[in-house]
Amino acid sequence: EAQVTQNPRYLITVTGKKLTVTCSQNMNHEYMSWYRQDPGLGLRQIYYSMNVEVTDKGDVPEGYKVSRKEKRNFPLILESPSPNQTSLYFCASTPRRLAGAIDTGELFFGEGSRLTVL
Amino acid sequence: QQPVQSPQAVILREGEDAVINCSSSKALYSVHWYRQKHGEAPVFLMILLKGGEQKGHEKISASFNEKKQQSSLYLTASQLSYSGTYFCGTGVSGSARQLTFGSGTQLTVLP
Image: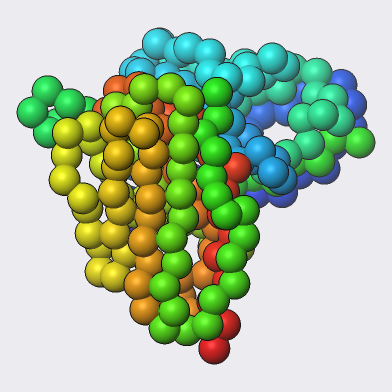
């Protein structure tokens, strides 16, 4: 089954304790990204990756790190979590779907990881 | 800058129609629409590109007014399964890599 898998789905941690949220996709998509979802703010992009070893900042990258060593995996790292990083996190991947010269691939989302930082 | 969605919430009876609007202050190239049911991941509905025609998906369709930098999502003869939060994602290119999402419109369809 084609899917994006995130782990853990739920996590409660304390300020300053490093954590990693894993993301894996089995669809051979080149592009992957991380979003956080907060009430009233919708989805905001944290980081994205165009391909292996190619990553770039989204709109809210502060306090996060990512890596893309393999095409299928795109972990999100919180080196020193703080309470303002309490949120629902989504990983997504996108195929390249060309309509002429335009890439129209849609986002395939994982099921989300709810993180609480105390 | 986030696109603005309106209304923020709407409650319907089964069979009624609804329109959700998405406006941007930037010149747009593309608009994506997603639906998120409670506790689930967002699911892609459709993409509209600059210069493209109105799209349809069962009883859900959308339009894209490039001059006004707006898109509208039309839900006709709504069903209970249409309940959820609808997000528009706007882009300065066609790619999902550069989407900026609105804050969402919560749609509730009652029997």
